[in-house]
Image (cartoon, rainbow, N blue to C red; front, top):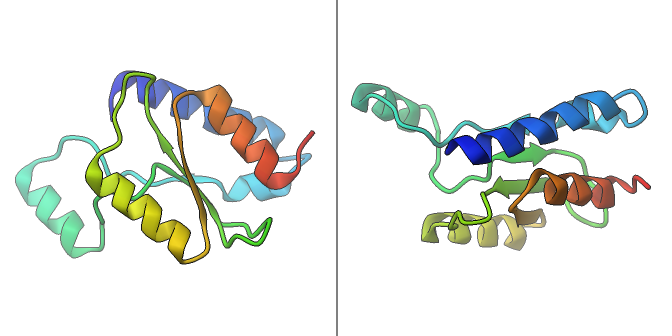
Length: 119
């Protein structure tokens, strides 16, 4: 994950931690560390243990608005979603999840607020 995307994602997680008391569902928000550079052997072991390319960065496994869960792929404003990520986001949607790409912490936080009905 690039540094700018990481900083934006960290801001989302920090906001969620601050809001957990009022909205306990946010305690379920977690990051999926699929990206990043790894040693070849570690990459092989991660693949064997179930790491899948294209999975979005964040998941909130809470059902709302008729969806099973919310997935958010974090990208910088100049970041590009890969074809593998697009395919995985489409597949997640097909099976009843809400999946989106956020180009800022503000967008991701607003998406979490909408999804959970936070004013």
